[in-house]
Image (cartoon, rainbow, N blue to C red):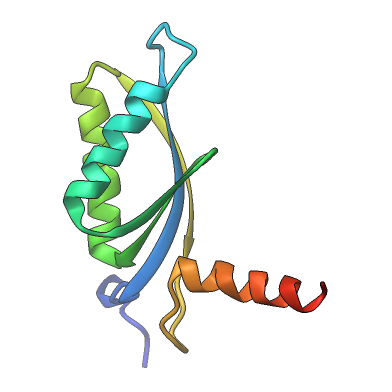
Length: 114
């Protein structure tokens, strides 16, 4: 029996590390746009972590992808005509694990070495 790929569901949960970059704003700083993205993420209620090269957001697949689209729209509305984003998406089916738990696991291993 052939698989109907058009009917495959998306994974339930995911995390996305993304970097949204407005292009052609005439300003080398993107701090205003990053702040706008953070406002969208906060309003979403999803777990997220800002870091120096982007943001990690986690939650239900459809909600995470929706909020990244909303972040694009918010930055467009703030005046950016063009935006380029890069994303790394992770999902797993064997267990639930937050980004914070992933970091803690590595920190715990490092603590054993000291």
